[in-house]
Amino acid sequence: MASVLLRGFALGLAIAAAPGPIFFLCLRRTLVKGWRNGLVSGLGVATADGFYAAVAAFGVSAITTLLTGERRWLALGGGVVLAALGARIVFGRPGTTETASRNRAGLAGAYLSTLGLTITNPATIISFAALAATLGAGIGGGFLRPALLVVGVLLGSATWWCVLAALGAGLRGRITPRVVGGISTASGLAIIGLGLAAVVSALST
Image (cartoon, rainbow, N blue to C red):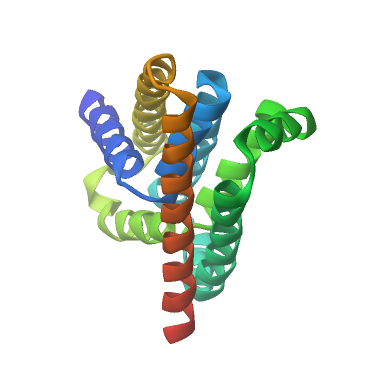
């Protein structure tokens, strides 16, 4: 049983640590808004990872088929949202934008936004669809072993975002606002680029 939990932990950690738009978004939120916002944003990602792990581990094939079948439209919608979010980061004024965002949405908005973005992220869908195709005999039947795998994925993903929030919080107190602004611009451009890449990929398939 412990091996199943460890496998899930390693899987969740590996998927969460893969560079992508959500990584840049959570890092930027940590540097600009503080560790709480970065951590809660990361936990939104971990929740989505746990959801897909449950779909894969418990063999909910109907959901897997639906999501993989609609991958093109999810990529298109997610890409547009990411590009718009990146543009807002690049062209917005950090002080005004972040204060207004905090007042409107706060931590709940940070959690829900990354949850939604990760749920519709084609890379996440593909990762866990591949997991669903390879599990089966790997974890056996029943309820306990699949449940342990899901818990492991949640813990692995959440651990990564805790580490990232802690590192970002440490950097936040050591770098100047100008450097933070440069990091925000760079992360915004990266998010725009990844969003446009998702759109182009969706339209070309």
